[in-house]
Figure 1 (spheres, rainbow, N blue to C red):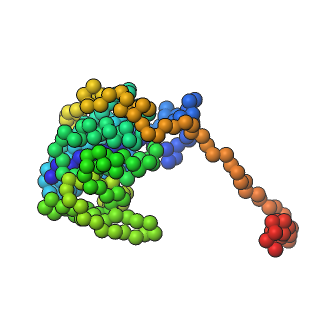
Figure 2: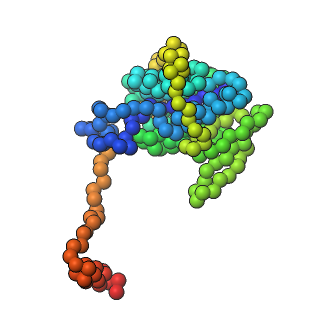
Figure 3: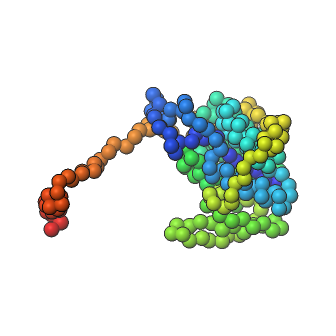
Length: 262
């Protein structure tokens, strides 16, 4: 069972003070801590669990800068056997379609039975790379996957739907699954795992190593182009009513009457 996991190196923004950069097309990245994308973390763990159960290899692959190597090292420490980093200045500002093309150009030449991605990325949240990559490879795919069962040349997966519902679908292998959080419990990285990961080679490829040109990637090769990022203006404000209970009640009644509700 050869499994490929697509991961992304993203900034942690949940508790950070986010600012828009001067070009108004991205956020200010200086000072932010980067790590593996949360959804991809679960995809990696699922790949390692499947390898431990069925045998085979796990290859982690990412499109990113040299800094993304730390995420790949974490993948190697967690049980990935190989890692590939796709790095080129011309990859910058690539949308989901362009990223999928970059991944496709490498993955199509690799042996694989299964490809796992996270449902979406923490930074942009488009949730498009997985399905587009599957389409380019011409293989079946399923999104929002919460459970995977493999048999000879086939798979059965549980998908999360709206309203707390789930559906079970069967797909032939090779296939691609976009993994939802909660499918497993990602393991901690051990000191021994980190030491072994530092000794493993990470294969680095640039645009010149792929069957693509500059018009296939970056802004030129993207369907989506960001025009501007901004903080939405506050359209409503909270009004605090002060005074005694009688004064507050009178004020509330006046507001309700002014809006024609009574």
